[in-house]
Image (spheres, rainbow, N blue to C red):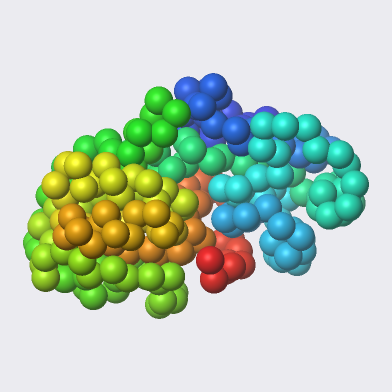
Length: 253
């Protein structure tokens, strides 16, 4: 496996080019290796020095992340940014980042897996962001209390950032948008849904949800965005027959 072959496989799976105008992330190969073979691919949520160190310890030649190092504007190669890039170069680790295409993907994306875990039947696109609906909504296979929904969504049994049981005791419909998608709670209200799940909830939507009787779960930005990375890892291992490892570096946020 080379980084060129890995890039082709990831692009075949994920609609990277389709989000080029909407996503500030520089999706795709952000830092290349020296052209040598990759024997192991590590997967993580964030491109941080702690993640890089653990990828090196695991013997990974390529690291796939959801949040990369480049976000639409040039950065000076200095300070912490320089240190991160220098570490990758010194250890010959390639960095591959996929942001919104990984949120949106209908089978391997963060929101598809969240919808699957909640039991949303025949999920429909939800949550318009820069011309793309990156989340999913639908009818639940069975009504869920907020407490049961939390159990289904919690990663490594970590508690959510916030639970707001403002709606019915058992939700029959739900929408999910991973990460920092607080304002989409208003869209859930407009559509008359019972439950809205995201990573972070802002103060500005609290009273609208309370008055509109919408249950909300802020599962945590990190904890709602491990799912797509892990699903792509499973696909990668099964289809490419290469060793993989998930690197869990929770932020608690």
